[in-house]
Image (cartoon, rainbow, N blue to C red):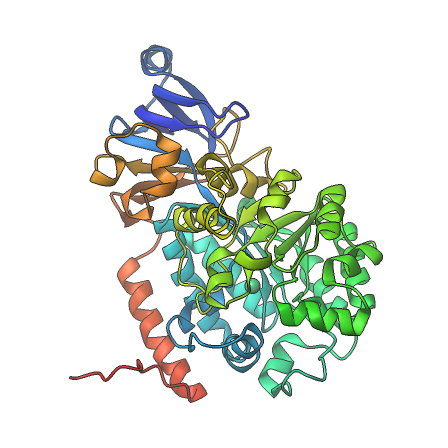
Length: 477
Ligand SMILES: [Zn+2]
């Protein structure tokens, strides 16, 4: 049991978006069991046996639902800073990121995922989505174990393909083994193997979804329709990388006569349980299709900027939000984006379209905060359990120390959070009713050990792959 007592401001993110002052939150058996004015809750709790309750003083704090990051590749964490930043999406993926990820052993994937979890917890994230895991089912198991050990929640899935376009560089043997299957039925067999072992682990903290690698030019019609059937069979949602870049849209048009989302519509794959990641190249007709099908979006603003995807030129995120489409935010992998702080991703999203279209009314601070909380929960089909602070919901909470200068004078908390605050003032993170981070220290992992192991293993992998991690500037020792 945990009592977060007398919180300065609770940003509930409930249907009325109430901001509660001077309230306390009581957590029991992993759920929020009471939210009351502090005096009233104190009186109520005096009548109960509260032996063993942990009391957190919230009087100089702001409490939010723990953030939800809807697109991550945890195996990319060991490649941070290793891959040049002047590559197109295709070059970055085919020459560096995918071969790197495909080369990791299961132990290395575990180490990388632990580092990713540590960074996400430190930034107030309770749950993330990593559904394009390369390698094998053993790699999925290793990452699931890292999630379980970290105390986080995650949605995991396998990334598989059955096509290799002629204009892509030849597939390397390790990448072939990690990603590619010679037929749709073989690829689908692997998804069945994963999901038939159960779609929930670690007491529900780890969920398995039907997924394929995505970027639909890597996928035959048979694979796309088959993974839809697979999701129906195991009653799981479904996720794709899609319409990520100009190259992908052009290739889809050349090969299939339509852009990727239209292709999914023609194949009857879309639905309210589908999470579409990236969605940079989407036309107005496709926005209408997505709204009609109630498909969800994981937009990755920092990766879009670094890989020059053109989101400020052609992106339709404001139109999607305007159409009622659920838009959530993802970090993507650490080699295409270095930002795992959801507040920084929300800040970027809030600013990109204001500037690109000379329109300061686009993506206001309140909307940006919704993208990383309640819309994140909606994107993963968990709005009944996560994404807001309400009695009966799961106790995934992030407590900010609001005494720093970036919080002052504190006139409008949502605006202050999106335009001024970042993850550095997070003091405490609670996931599933457990305090996994407190006083800016991780309780569930030995941070020093996780970081030291990651450094050592990352250097070993770079050496093994013949990649030179040295900066462009001269290093003097
Ligand atoms: Zn991705």
